[in-house]
Length: 322
Ligand SMILES: Cc1cc2nc3c(=O)[nH]c(=O)nc-3n(C[C@H](O)[C@H](O)[C@H](O)COP(=O)(O)O)c2cc1C
Image 1: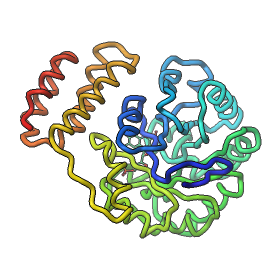
Image 2 (image 1 turned 90 degrees about the vertical axis):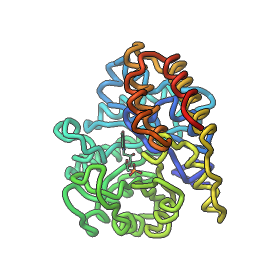
Image 3 (image 1 turned 45 degrees about the vertical axis):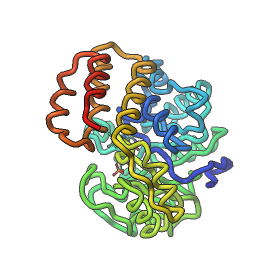
């Protein structure tokens, strides 16, 4: 159990926000395998207030997909507030996160995402405005720095975020410049933890239960975000819980992997509101996540990439060796 502002949450292991990945299908399959709290994909504040179809599709959810948090991308406090109010009127979110972590060039060029780490006046204004005006807690997801590691600087940034009214901080243990590769810096996450009294979550390389334990131990964080580690391995949530309770997780058999992949594809087929050609492209991507772990995967991957429709995909999976 963890408290974020006024909200008590049953778990301190969350599915991270993953643009292009943490859609309803991924969240449902993760929840069936032990995830108790998830994020929607990141939502662009501007798009949301202009009612763009894509943003509205991102917040498609179900009763079984609760509790959940949302993350907004933006920099204008007024627009972010309007988007947040719209969001709250449409879906029941436990808290709202501000993206200060995205390193993508297009995002940073618009002075949003990780750029906000370099623009502390704006960062503070946004958090003050949202936390004063909204009925739910506000959090921030940050990186350990923009271009380089600097323990003093990240501690100051964390304090500013907390003093501006945030109720938790999520820290991806890499700089903006590192993108998604390279070492995760536990020391910087620990510096954030030591700087503030609000809960701090660690993120980065949570690919198995051992690395989850390492994140808790090395950074002293209060919770963790599982990101790429959940793609093709939704059972990682149960495995982490088992391992943190001192037991070794059971290995997942091939028939179980296939059944989980088929269920995931079924959710995509049912809930993904996109054209058929786009949907099959998405199904291929998801199948490849799972197939990385299958024997003979190079040959099988080739087959997946040329599959033309859902039924052919299912047939291919059924014919995989157990
Ligand atoms: C495909 C992809 C999409 C992501 N989208 C977001 C996002 O929208 N918002 C965010 O704060 N972080 C996003 N992240 C970062 C993750 O939430 C996480 O912090 C990061 O991947 C580090 O964790 P990992 O090394 O365990 O994957 C994304 C990461 C990936 C790989």
